[in-house]
Image (cartoon, rainbow, N blue to C red):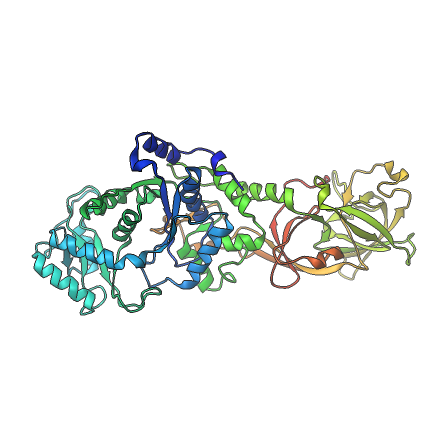
Length: 561
């Protein structure tokens, strides 16, 4: 795990350093995580967690976990539980406390009434389409609502009747009274409350009006004593509204909002709305399907929290949007697994090898290291017998160019064992090679005096007699191209699509291989155990039975191919 004190500095930390030098906030650093419980966290949220919780950790401050549950339409306790599990798995905590935005509904309502009484808010009856037209455009100022000059008494009466449930959804909203000619559209009398007759997973049927995020969030930050409120870049234009709410509500504590670039990854969907669609339409097998970019899916696939934190730090925290290559994430995952994952041999597409000069009853026990760089991880026994399996791709009948694997008349060393020579092969009726007939150089056993003879190729293998069959799942990117369909980790509108992302889904994103063969000691693997299958990749034991998901491929194998 990355040490927060030794982590790479960024512009946010520079800002906070300046605030501390200036004596602001009495030397406090207090941040918050504001996830909306309408889906499971994805890798983009890991950046938000790193920025907020990691910043508090770096400065020895506090970080709150506060669920932004102001919209009951798509929120659920399932998502609350999953989010907390993911944050803990990443190695962070909410040492400032656990909160829910819904806990502040009474306070938000009280402040809304105060804004009405102060002439800073009014009830508007404009339909949504007309309200949008009245708001104007980037080049044309907006127009005042015909309901903008209602008296405070009338507005207060209407607002209370909204709360009492007298009006239908969408018939009225509470708006701030700011400036319809503002060059910032977010300041053109934004909506503070809307009517939504729907029970809430925390408050039940108590409310039928709910505060908007732009109104509730700064209030919650101010109440909790947040000093620095970090959010993604599209909220930069919302910052004047954030400040307006804090000032209009007369809070003594004024948090500072700081925006940073969200995380965008090649070939990856980073939008809870889009991911939810994948789940609900059955394109994947759930939020933790290993093809998904959710943290739970990455955990299931074998990614480690240390690798994800390393990746977020390497990707950096900047002000400008960019797209990070998925290869960097895989590099970080591969780097950490390379240090912690035991080595084993497994064959995904078995090809039978019969050693014609090896006695049928002979068994040669060999010792294999569990990790070449960590002898403390121990060893395990591998049995060498007459019949073996190698990968189908490790034999070629008519090889071209430099091919250092097995071919007719060619020799290779079997990892940790003997040199064998291919003398003949057997084909089925379709012409497919089904068996190799080989001879073994019995004097070439690894570690013996005769092992000095060199051959260029080394192959992994398993002993057919005690090999354990398993299912392997190999994954490819879910998108067919490098277009990034991204959305802020905390919500907001998606970037424009050139076409519907469903049409860009890779139909071969998951390949299921049955009849794979592994060393017998892998029978003891527990769900979540991770291994490097030599020359194949890193794999993680799945919960669906004796199944291994490929976590990531190998950048380099231990032998040339």
